[in-house]
Image 1 (spheres, rainbow, N blue to C red):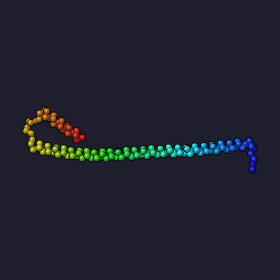
Image 2 (cartoon, rainbow, N blue to C red):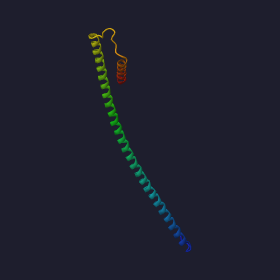
Image 3 (cartoon, rainbow, N blue to C red):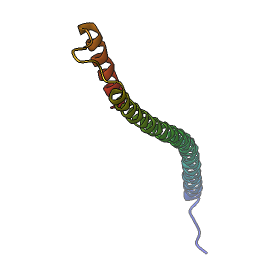
Image 4 (tube, rainbow, N blue to C red):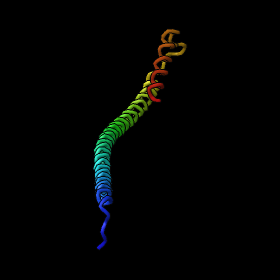
Amino acid sequence: MMQWPETFKPAAVRAIAALAVMIGFTAGMAVGGWRSGAAVADCRADASARDAEAAQQALQSLQHAATAVTEAASVATASSARIAAANDAARRRWDELVKLHPLPAGCAPDQARAQAMRDALERTRELMQ
């Protein structure tokens, strides 16, 4: 076995102690870094879960809105078909009445009444579009 000089022993002990402290410090920093990394990952996972939940709620809201729009469109389409059918029936009835009860020769509505009929016809056309 090798003998160390007396003056060298305390220096070697100090060097070994310093090396042990450095190894311990490095290991502690590595473990602390791993723990910090895990904490950051947990925070990111929580934020991602919250974002996913918010996106899911927004998607459900959008689906409900799309359903409401679809229902409103079908109601509007049905109403439009009913209005068109009623308009056709009224036009046929008008034609029948004109044939059954024609106006006397030379009879015409005055200017105000003719304008009122044109306005009513225009409003009806606007409603049909």
